[in-house]
Image 1: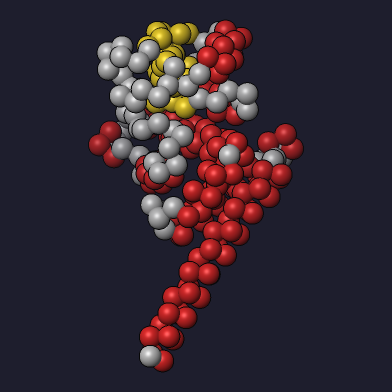
Image 2: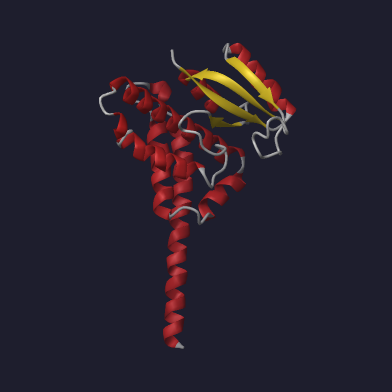
Length: 215
């Protein structure tokens, strides 16, 4: 089974200990551990350490879905992006990956194995992204409020992002265990708040226009 390199960013000793148990239980290869100041990577210093591992797609998904582990990560591949728990970046990264999912690297035409592996990585990346994003939403109500009020994304992009999450957590109709309807309902509530927030903006703008005309 193919593996990929990732750096797992750990912020405190408690999560470090939980992570190490997770890695040991799944026999995941640890390539190295780097602390602030080591090689200048990553630049941010508000973390305990960075654990570099070789990980399979299956283990990667399990890490994203484990509610007991509060970490973020960087992919050491052609898909290297900023920290996954930065909500100013994650939705844009997902949007970028979705575009690539529809149109993989056309400069490598004819290499079916390469394209298949790339599509598998993109699909897994998006799945793990949905899991990490849901974990962030559930962990801190402030994250949800930030997402709703953020001007970094348009309302359309936010709704599309949440629709993709809902579709993912609806699961496979033939696999009951993959169907997470409580999570779908949770995301639907966020979606309704975004639509309500947008409607209120339109109403306020209309009132201002009316006031300007009257004056």
